[in-house]
Length: 571
Image (cartoon, rainbow, N blue to C red; front, side, top):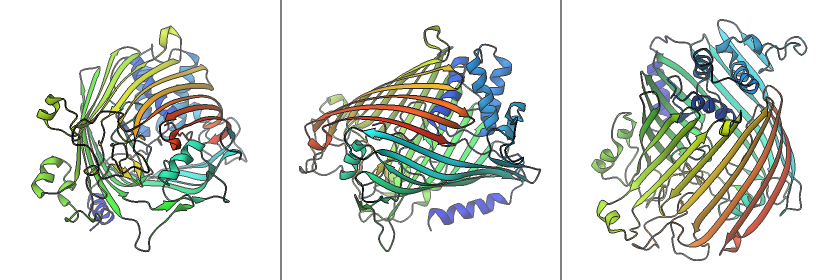
């Protein structure tokens, strides 16, 4: 039995219960959008009781409840004209929950279109809540290493709503053609997958030109007041940082079943994901065998706790398992479907070779406008080997530290963020064929995989309500594996971490050194609700002992996007 059968059976059983609460959809993952929400929690100096920020995406009803509680209870949060604009923007974007008067359009188009600022068309009756919007992303630019004009061409539709105010639904479909940045194409020559995407094909035979569809969708409902269930095909993000080691939006969407329990000061999340274990292909596109691509499963649970008014701590556990792995003798591990059990104990009891990861995240809103956060991942270790300090290969962990400073130096709407990430060699990889922490041959967490350290600085400034300026600087040192040398240095999560490696003497950055400086600047003007014009500059300098990683790239671009987040390749 696979996850689809299990999920449908569980939904049928739970669906027989009385649904007691109106159901909300989730706001899609979007870096800029979610920064605005998190900004106001940090500015308030308290952890939110409506939103547990380490678990993204957020429900639209919770977003409205959160910003309304701040607006009514703290006069020091929405202080500037820009803050008030953002407050109205967030409430207008989820007007079915806020019923904001500001969400009404002054002049609807053809009487029935854009009666609300955020929706091309909507239905608002007791039996049906429906929102339909176009999705468009047109961009042109110049890549210093590619003779062809860089471009992105995305067209699609987004649809969300509720039936009888009990069952929520969401669907998103786009057709996309693009010339990806040259440094992305370099990476694809070694691992032919498009970052963030699944199946793809080449476009008109041009270098770095790709063609792909993206589809996301889910249904969601609340069987009780405090329990939410979501089933669909999408992705989510775990953590408070710019990066996440455990779940990020880097890998493509996947099938999942997720249960979220929010009671008092606790939030408990359980999810089961069905992911693609292997993605054969070439620079001509993805390939699929007659029997389909092999599947893998990732079970995850997290308990997040608000301690006092300023501190939130979360602990989590994740396990990768599969019955498609040629080296795995077991079948589907039904024990992992227990949402409140210790995976490591089950793994040991079953004598399996599954990949279990433990971790925690922390957020401390130290004072108003200043927040500290972090994440710790423990893949495997022996305390005696750690004490010995001899670089044993299986002491595998990853660490994140960061800080957010809101209205920095007294400048309204100037926000700063600094973050440090490191991952030991061989972390997240495994000794079975499909046991690595990847989906469709892409890391589920940090895009660099392992064997690196990274420093990130982000400046966000909103000098005018409709103008958003974002500058980023990332400095990375990663140890690469050679394409011609069989030696395993521990950065490639697709490799068997039990082979071709040294037992001792392993250090972060070992192998073929690759130093990367990535700088970007984006100016976005919001023409109308969710319609943006972006001017973007990217400068990336990569120095390495391996020619494939030794390059300098400058990209300038201009884009128009509507109801879609910026497409980012920031690694």
